[in-house]
Length: 341
Image (cartoon, rainbow, N blue to C red):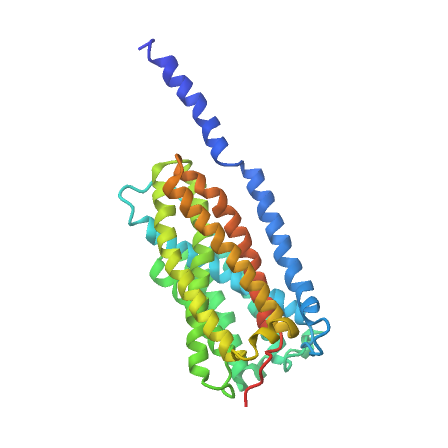
């Protein structure tokens, strides 16, 4: 007994040191989150003016604020869907640890509700920024297609917050799904050529993107909670396989959607001469960086002596994905280069 106790105590004493070497402390993680949050705030507020510079295009009133609200709305979709997605993957593991991080679904629903409410107020005034509550015409939202879709998003986030308390995955998935459908329909109005095709592409693109970004965020939170257990590497590998399929779907639908708005003969010119094209080009570069980080993480999972070192490029990947979400918000607020007739 006395001969084995020092060895055990030494292992227990060295265990936290090894874990802390693999996983940075909570303070460092919080600092990274704060920096990412600041970056995602700066991009929507300054991005539209930079993209519109010397293009001759006119932006909608309050384009920076609208871009910020849309970025928050997209982020609020990523969190609950990512949690549901990765928790489902975790249940496929042979012996998953019981520990789970606290859910952020309620906070995401609250942020999404505020963002959707702000966007609905803009729609109610004829896509003008309201200067006071008296300018907001709630009844007018029921009289237009965009107004009805805005109301669906507001109510869906409110319902998402209530369902998050119920802790029933079958209930939690429907409100975010309703927001994605509403966003797909809003992005492609009836005057557009083949609006149903455009809505279908946006539906697949946005669904896969929310699962990719939100799923990676929740996977990293689980890895931090499980503290270096073998199940963490198994979960990261399982997520990586699904993420490869999601990335393929995101790329295919993104390219198809871009070609619908910028035909192949003009796309190279419009990528540099229009605000929409410039922002799209920035998003493509960021997604390429994310894909490179994902490949790096996958390489470490397969080849490194300790597969859990793959969490380092994965953390960089989720940070860049946060910027991608912000750029996506800017993209939806800018004027489309091709006007459909």
